[in-house]
Image (tube, rainbow, N blue to C red; front, side, top):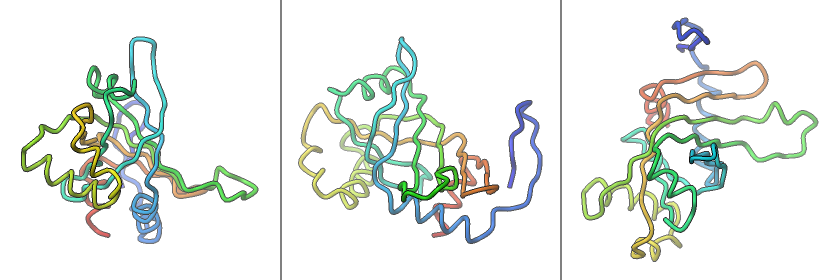
Length: 173
């Protein structure tokens, strides 16, 4: 596994064990609701959003209304962060909960393209109730392409993945 230090020097570390990789894949696939951070003129805005995994692209699909401030922010500035966390189960130390923070950029997929249709099918398969909203003109289908993914698999199990490493993690499952 490659880690980035604060000086952006690459350091080779031990690879993520199969157990941690499997638990992170399971976390991403089981959770559906994540914290989404966007940027606007006043700074960061955090909100919640549904996501669907696109293993082939290594990205995540987000289907959001332009009535929401976070969507308007994303159309102005594509830099976002998405945080997926294991549910709080009441354990004594919540710092041991598995979580990942995805930093990347979104792109609005153009309607009536193969890319849009594939991502839309993946999203609707995960969220069947969303099918009607795909007919609404104010909804935008975004693809979040990670630049870097920070994974905390529990105490003393932290990893930083590149977009290619993250795509590989998603495809292994």
